Length: 448
Ligand code: FUB
Image 1 (tube, rainbow, N blue to C red):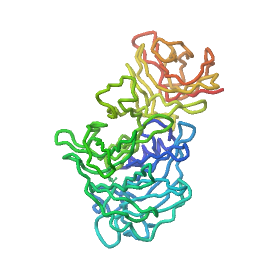
Image 2 (image 1 turned 90 degrees about the vertical axis):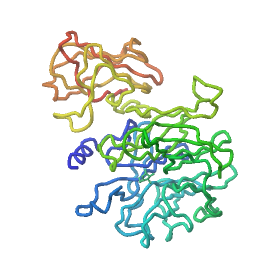
Image 3 (image 1 turned 180 degrees about the horizontal axis):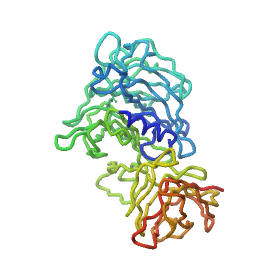
Image 4 (image 1 turned 90 degrees about the horizontal axis):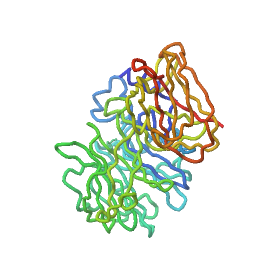
C-alpha cells in the first residue's frame, strides 16, 4: 500500500486531460455535467481505510466528494472536498460510505445527490444539497429523501421540466419541483437485461431516452451496457455494450456532450493496481448516426468505446504534452521517470523509426517546442511531424548526452513553420545505429 501512496504523490502535480484524468486523489463513479458551457465532474473518492479498521471496509472506503472542472481545455481544477462523510447531517459518523453522486441544475440552482449510510440502518439512503454554484458550497438537507432507499442516484430533467430520479435498485420516480422529495411512487424499470448490476445514467437524445448501466456477464464480468425507450419510465430495450470489461472492478460511468463531442467518463485502477482505489478516466464516444461511417440500420446506437491512455483534451501553448499518454505507439515503451525528474511517465527504449502518435494538439500562437529529455548517448535525432507518420516535419532535435538515461534536461527548438489550428503529431526516433536507443522523453511543450 505504501508503494501506491508514493506513486500517487509522485504524479500528484499532473492533472491534465490524459487518462487517468485525476492523479492526486483516488476518484471513482464520475458523473460529468456541462453547466454554462463548462465541463464539471462529480466523482466519489476512494481511500485507504483508517489503521485498525480495515475489516470494516470489505468493499470500499469512501470519505467524501471533490468537484473538478476542465480549465483551458486541458487541465482539471480541483475545487476541493465539498462534503465529508462526518458532515452528513443524517449519516452514520465515520462510516466512509459516500458512494456514487450526481449533480444537476434547475432554475439556476444546483442539486447534489449522494448516497450514504444513515445512522439507524445498514444500507444507503440518498441525500441532497442545494447551491447557487456548481462547485458549492451546498446547503445539505437535514434528512435523506423519503422513499429513496439505495445507491447511485442518476437524474434526468426532461424537456417539459419534469425530473426523474433513477437509482441502482432498478427503480425510477419523479421528483417534485423542490427537487428534494418524490412526486411519484418508485417504479421498477422494465426491460433491464439479465446481469444488470447498478450505476444507471439516464439521458435524452433526439427524443429517445437512454439508460446506461453496469452490466455483468458470466464469461466476461462487468461491462457498460445501454438501453433505449420512448418513455422515461420505460420499458427499456437493451441495445448492447458501450465498453467491454476492463478488469476486475466496478464500472460506474456517465456520458456528456461537451463542445459538440460526446464523452464517456468511467474509472479504472491503473494508478493503484487495486480495484478499491480507483481513478477516473474519459474517452470520446460516438453515436453511430453522427459518426463518419454511418450505418442506417443502427440509428441512435452507440459505438463501442475503446479505453485509451490519451483520453480527451487539447493541449495548447504552455501545456505539457504528455506523450507517454499516447494514441498509438510503435517500437517504443513507457515507464515511470526517475533520476532528477520528480514526477510523471516517460517514453523510453525507442528503436530506430519507433514512433508515438498523440492526437489533438492546438498550435495557435506556437513558435517553439521544448522537449524534456534524458539521454545516455550522443547519436541520432527525434523529430515531430504533423498528422501522419510521413507528414510535414515541424521540429527536429539532435540527441544530446544529458549525463545519463536518468539525468533530465529541457531542449528547445523553433518550429519550422507557422502551424494553424489543431493537429495530431507523430514523434519519430532516428537512432542512426540499430544498437542505440532513442532519447527518453517526459513531455513536449509549445511556446509562443
Ligand atoms: O463506488 C461505490 C459503488 O461502486 C458505486 O456506487 C457503484 O456504482 C460502484 O461503482
